[in-house]
Image 1 (tube, helix red, strand yellow):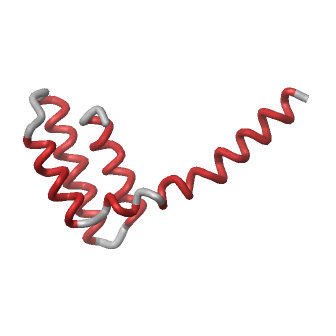
Image 2 (cartoon, one colour; image 1 turned 90 degrees about the vertical axis):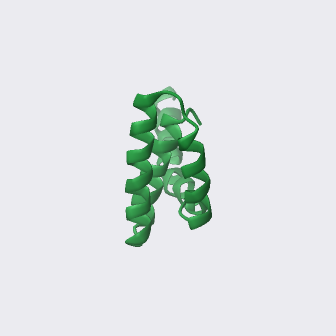
Length: 84
């Protein structure tokens, strides 16, 4: 019984993962990129700032290519570097 519950829960999580990413499409806009540039500029941890800048640039590049999934992936990494 316990295994069945775990399998059902795992299946539900796998089905929700694409929907979660689609909800973050608003991250891939010029307005959000401008906001992120300003926030990254204020960071004091040089290592995390460099990483966030790299992910932000990769996110911008993906956005410009129309790669929404790639844009979101790198934006999530930038947010993580920023402690968000």
